[in-house]
Length: 129
Image 1 (cartoon, rainbow, N blue to C red):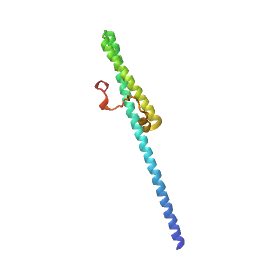
Image 2 (cartoon, helix red, strand yellow):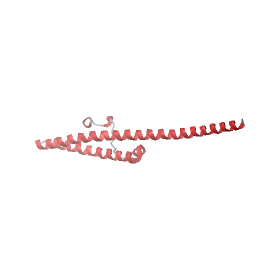
Image 3 (cartoon, helix red, strand yellow):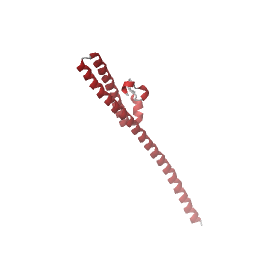
Image 4 (cartoon, rainbow, N blue to C red):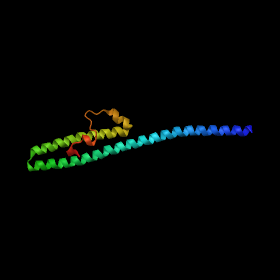
């Protein structure tokens, strides 16, 4: 009877060890998955804004050329200024994308861009939408 009891103790000890190790590994796996998902969601968000701005830039360049061809140089200058502003935003978005790709979301918080463009709807001008 002592042998049976001794075997049961080892069984319970092994189950306890497996539960502790499994829960630790499981928690770390869930955290890693959630971090990966958050990172990819942020990359998708940055990419969406980047592509939207590229489309807006293409339209502004077209209108710049059109205004020049009509001789409306004041309007052409306004379109050129808009293109330059969009280029600045695109550069910042590209740097943010690279920072997140290389170092995760923590790197984005630590980058500290001067005058950083944060792609949120509340901060975009109506003509940038």
